[in-house]
Image (cartoon, rainbow, N blue to C red; front, side, top):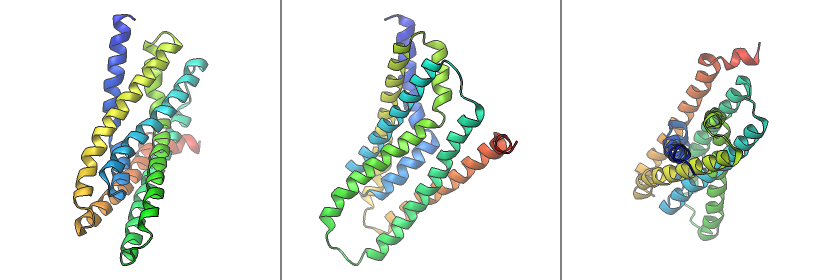
Length: 224
């Protein structure tokens, strides 16, 4: 393994960590963390998100390496647009879940069985959100790599290392983000935090879509 490849892989790992803490990722994971009042669960949300994210990156990356061609701007931007839609729906979902929770707060029964189901649902949800996030913005990142990496297996290695960085970044982040939600669990403040996470998610999602559509010219690409 050459020094230059090693440095590329290290860069990949660091980029992965940096990539994990981009605002749309952070907002998505904090929305999930806000719903699970359990630190372990919110940490796992971060990990599953990272795994889902890496899975997509890997598949997209391999297709791009094999196809050796760039995808069109329209496709790339449309994939990012999906993330905007998802952030809005995540935020709404979070607020609706909170309203329901308040409504059901008086009835505490069959709590234990639902916790296990809920745990799996949180993991799956994080995994799918990671998958969708992997689609957006990943193409550009992978293409950038492909110009520096010479063979397919090096590319594959790079993506996996990048993925590890993303998981590490997300793991640490979802732990930090989970703490205030867990500490305030069951208290009034948790509701406010929960709703705040939801509102930020919705607003950021709308801004994200507006920015893509208007500033990046996606709408004109669609309707041209």
